[in-house]
Image 1 (cartoon, rainbow, N blue to C red):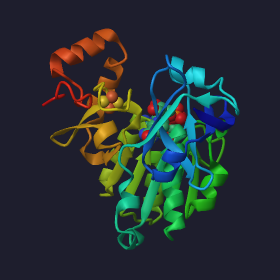
Image 2 (image 1 turned 30 degrees about the vertical axis):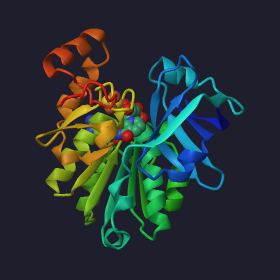
Image 3 (image 1 turned 135 degrees about the horizontal axis):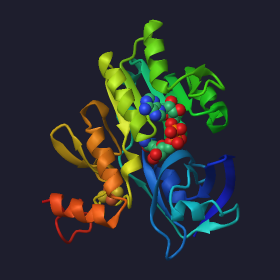
Image 4 (image 1 turned 120 degrees about the horizontal axis):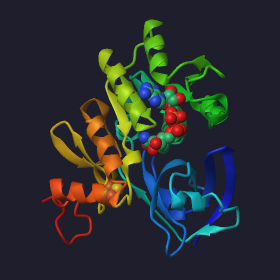
Length: 295
Ligand code: NAD
Ligand code: FES
């Protein structure tokens, strides 16, 4: 069992938990995710890692209830526990695995949208701890939905907060801030954009105009997180990839976002899944070891 040491509601719809998970805390790196299971009957829920403390052997997760399992998670309190915490899974962010001296030469821009601020935080923190201060844009619909502001402020080079309704920070969506920063003379060698699919799509369209290579996290399309369900299949250039096994981060300029969002919608219904099976054959990755997946 994995004890929940802290359970906090960050705002009306976003929850934070600190969980004792020694093995994950020992090995995880920014960009990776874990899977939690509340009990024997519970679904496997893939969640990005927001923070970790190797000494305390804890990991921090941030989530928004989107289905029955995440809704059930909102009732858990400090002192309760998860039956399973599996991880770290997926590949760490390239920015933390590349040669740090090369990364130091780059001007990096992070764009975090809503709950996507949680997976951006450990990357910015890691870079800060390695002497690299990145610019960070955090966007939310309104003031009350901004999360981790103090934490981000402590590790970002410059933090630009924006709200869609102008209730706090700048006014407008994150893409407007990218445009404004470039117009103000800022230059970036790489952008990391993490948030809702639609935000990542429009960020990529914006950064493409300015020739800024852009990394996105395809975590939102994952379902089981193990390479077995096929939900996270996506086209990256002319290749087929699986977000949970090959990602979660990819070159955003190569992703077919419209196809990924359409698939995400179809995957929500039995009829949609049946149609995907018909069109794509065995849509899963073959992680079960039995059927060979798409091969
Ligand atoms: P949201 O809908 O409030 O959007 C957050 C910000 O994204 C907005 O304030 C705006 O600045 C920007 N945005 C939204 N639509 C845009 C558009 N069309 N063009 C430009 N910018 C746009 O976000 P939320 O409700 O907090 O996010 C929930 C989503 O985040 C879920 O769908 C979840 O799957 C996703 N998420 C993604 C990741 C990831 O790894 N990519 C991680 C956690 C959550
Ligand atoms: Fe199921 Fe990737 S989430 S195959």
